[in-house]
Image 1 (cartoon, rainbow, N blue to C red):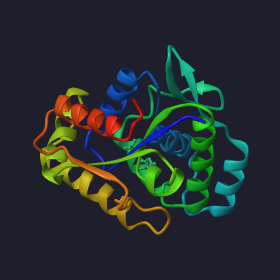
Image 2: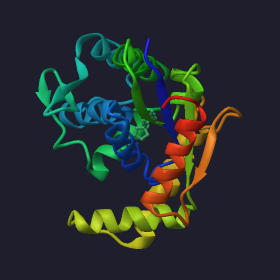
Image 3: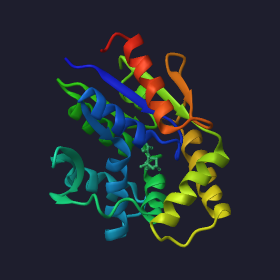
Length: 223
Ligand code: DC
């Protein structure tokens, strides 16, 4: 049995950056659970699968293979054997994905894959419902938060760098829409449970956030 560190929180708080840094410092596997959900979103865009067609969705989940496989020492999302890491980080994929992320059978499918990845090893895993639902027994549960305007500003800059056509107002609207979808869905909504350690990164640098997280790792006796 290994130990599990979960990081949950809304979009744009820097969960991915924190998880990557921690996995390098602690030398443990990093699982980006959102990439599994995004791979289904990509599949839906490619095939025209609708989130309202439950019968078809159930059949698809029984047939497709969404997996994280190790490539160059990192876990990368694969769709029926194809490495799709280069296609899932777009706003189009994010938008479609959030419609599927609220569906119970989708969450069950993803949770099963996440638990399989965590079997018998130390992992750090980030997303929305890891500490609250998928791994309630995790040794350290971090809830990473930040002010919505700050998160929108970070996302705005990231998208500008990627060359996407974006304004700050649009970035804010996208983050607010995703916050609403993440925290109001019926199945495993984004919540902070009592046993989570909150880090508010609004006025913190990445280094400060990592430092605080390492303090928590030590406090839990994991290193
Ligand atoms: O963290 P992200 O932006 O890559 O997440 C993509 C989508 O997947 C987003 O709509 C939230 C959803 N998601 C989720 O519902 N549960 C998770 N554990 C991870 C992501």
